[in-house]
Length: 270
Image (cartoon, rainbow, N blue to C red; front, side, top):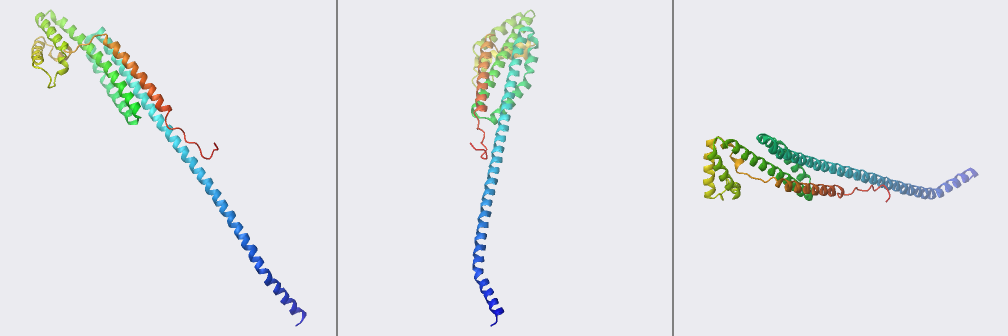
């Protein structure tokens, strides 16, 4: 074999010997590349999850702030409705002391305010929580009691005024109506009207009152003659309302400030 052939065989042998080493190096490089890629994927996944958690936490916090704002507005709206109703109750009471003949119109004007207050109370009851709902019902009941005191005072004042006005023309009838009305009030029969507990004596008084009132032309104002309220009752009802308003404000403040705390952003170190 000539020298050229020997050189070719030697080169081929060297090439064959280098193949395993090349394969081994390639394998190491491929493994290293895979490990690098996997580490990158894990890092990317961790970054994605952190971003997702951050967005989720922000969304929950924004929702909680929105919910708290809705509740705050509902509480404030009910309180304003209660104060409006309270102011109108005072107008009813004042009207009875100035021009009692206009009192029925002032009383009738309270109906839209009462409807608005009832609606806003229902909203608060739906929003909750329970302790706020209870405080809301307490303040509504207190202002309704105040209005009832003012209505009864206006009615009884109007009844006395009307009887005095009719006394000159119907002295005997007016006197008898006053006596029967006083008996009806003292025995609290007027609270039993329309109930099975109404006694026979009360039915007889009511029948005679209707007849007398029809005679003098005041039958349509019959309820005014059966109610009675002392003016001093206004002070007690007003004081109870102020207490209920204070309790409502304190309860709502606690509910708003002690609600769920903001969710921390997991991407920010503690």
